[in-house]
Image (cartoon, rainbow, N blue to C red; front, side, top):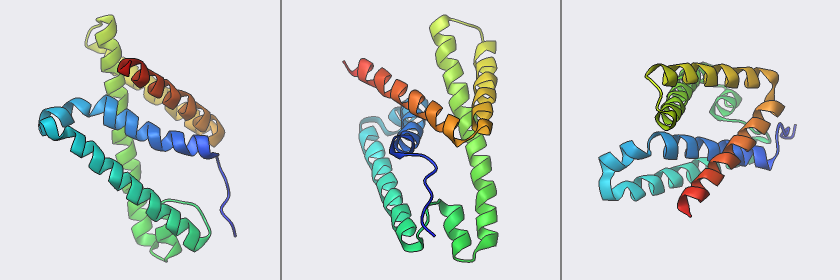
Length: 163
């Protein structure tokens, strides 16, 4: 059985870039720079290399097994269902924590721009999480469209800041 396409190249690219730009640039850049100082560039270079190696590994697994997927899919494929189930729960918890940090960071950025009180970051975080949950429940088509739009928005913001 061949790999089924759930979304196209632009959606896949947007998911990869969106995760790196959202987390790596907007959420943790200040922490990385304050911790690493002049070596912050090396942190991002290493993260990029790790992402490249991971992408290569997943592409090789997809070729080997004739299917697309992530760590869960391939662990199940090699009859490690228990490890796959454990990994699935770790990923779910990790994604919940990650989206919470991103949503809270977004709330803080907006609150800083509009000079709002401490209540706004929390309220916006809840609103962002609820909106993204709703989009994801609507299906992969809507989720990938939102991902593409937000990633291109992030890229435009970064280009504008660089100019």
